[in-house]
Amino acid sequence: MRLEPPEKVSEEQLTIDVREIEPLLQAPPMDLKPWPEAMIPLRQRDGSEKMLYIRQAKTEDVQPMLAFMKKVMEVEKDFYDIVGARVYAEILGEYRKRLKDPFTLVGLIDGELAGFANGRFKNEDIAISLHTMTFARRGRIGWAMYYAKTYYALEIAGAKEWWSTFESYNGWRMAGLEMAQPSYPWPEYQHELGGARIFYVTKKYWDSSVKAFAKQMIGSDLNFNVTDEVRKANENFRCPETPTL
Ligand SMILES: CC(C)(COP(=O)(O)OP(=O)(O)OC[C@H]1O[C@@H](n2cnc3c(N)ncnc32)[C@H](O)[C@@H]1OP(=O)(O)O)[C@@H](O)C(=O)NCCC(=O)NCCS
Image (cartoon, rainbow, N blue to C red; front, side, top):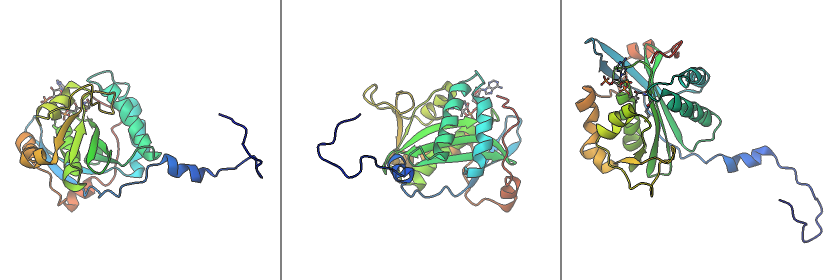
């Protein structure tokens, strides 16, 4: 837009340093507590047990995850395409500082990315669940990752409510159904992921019921005393060569 100035001005052109624009575009961060790393044993269908190591994503993980997510978004099955595309944008959004108070957890088995879970804080009371993904299937990895990020939001970072929505049947079963999450009236309330229903867990409901979800539904719990052996087994992060979904 242009209008003539209503008075004579000394300088008709102003030069603005982009460093002065950036604080307006970037949200000031909330100083969230970090996820302290955890491990959780997961029983496999063949009776064996795999140890899932869950830590915060690091900056070095970003490029390999973006490259992997490009492949995942090509998989037209079980909603991996839409979720892969959105997760790509979220990883990049966090990296380019265009998400407000995001948090991202990666689940590794022997250093390989097996699970992903992220979210962000809308404000001090409400945390939004973004996405959960499993890359080694049928091992309840998604359930552990979703539980871990819910634990983070409500137990560690101090949210009073946790808002999710579900883009896939497996996602809805894992968290909407199995955590018996109620939903807000729709379309009055809409989740930021495409305007779908908001399913929610309050801190009160978490304390009374959902906190027991891992033990009840996965058969094991998060252990925050990660052993040196598990840490060492996961020190070199890598993504699967190709998604086998
Ligand atoms: C949603 C998701 C995180 C759930 O995690 P999960 O339950 O650990 O994931 P899995 O995909 O391994 O298993 C889910 C179900 O898919 C089906 N399934 C998976 N692999 C299968 C296979 N090879 N053959 C037959 N069924 C299969 C099974 O019904 C399985 O349930 P079961 O483990 O009780 O048998 C995961 O399915 C996923 O990443 N989906 C794509 C992204 C997505 O939809 N994210 C959630 C957005 S709301």
